[in-house]
Image 1 (spheres, rainbow, N blue to C red):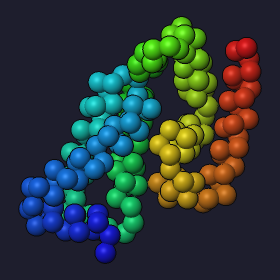
Image 2: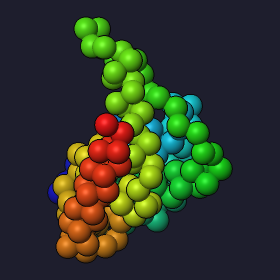
Image 3: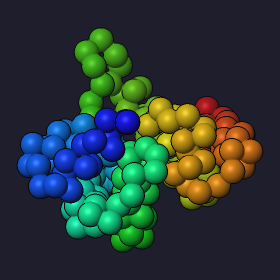
Length: 170
């Protein structure tokens, strides 16, 4: 049996330690995902917490059929979409490491973020899941609920558009 199945079984039986292990296991992954879909760290934190609240409100009826992370990504994605509709500003995440030209790194990051935000929502989603969350294309397909060939097409289309958008910046 897979570790998540056992963990969820323990959580359903009221094991507080299992709940803590579950949150520790997935919190940073979901938070990083939310950060890529939101404008501020505070928003990412709020949506991450809301994702886990949503999961724990309904986890007793959750049937473990695959990767639990995929289920959490779907919840987070829906919450991020709601948040995205409310806000329209781009905010940077962090300053670069020492030794790098901070202004060049910041400008590059802004260019990339702006270019990704220009993509249609369906293309943004596959780019973020595949490149920023390091998910396999099959996992992206499962999370979004589309076929693998369509994910591959969207990745290709996103690359083309990003190349054009970023090429215009130079």
